[in-house]
Length: 250
Image 1 (cartoon, one colour):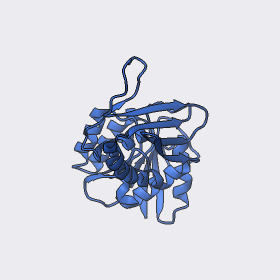
Image 2 (cartoon, rainbow, N blue to C red):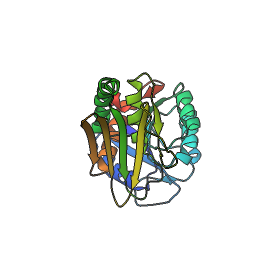
Image 3 (cartoon, rainbow, N blue to C red):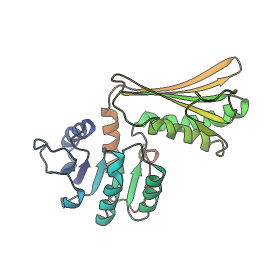
Image 4 (cartoon, rainbow, N blue to C red):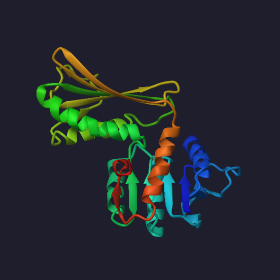
């Protein structure tokens, strides 16, 4: 039996994960961590991770970037692997993730979807072929009006995997409103749309001379992210210290 501590358990994703894990014969949630309090989840909920002493083999985090530092410290103190699904982390926090991964197993992914992680592999190949041929690269991401970070962590991750295939020669551009010049050939444009209840949509455009190639991923339910997190937790439990990602799970 894999014992899970669920951070962000009272949010939408936390509730989906609670139901999904309850249906898993080899997993159970032993405790939750959230600033909100609920007594109908079937397990104790702590506002402070330091107060949580529940048995655990892995933590799944779908909370807020402000909580990540404390959660990492808690997991390091317990030697507890963590599936880090929270997005919007600062460069300083990403450095901390890298440092702490030398002490515990951390799986961090900007998107837990199997489809997105396959898309990343396809984009590496496409960028390596199309960018040298003169194709401009743009990413347009769309999310619901309650998402607080922009652009999405997934959009940045998609851009990074494309740039990685090009030896890091490109740079990201998020806003052209103050620019009065033609497009730089070495840029990857990233645009964000926020509105309604859009779960998540990412469109990657390769615009060349007289032709356009488009890759697109649409999420119709956030349950797919929860499913990926469950798979990741099963993969990560018992793993040695290191930094893992969803490409190793799928």
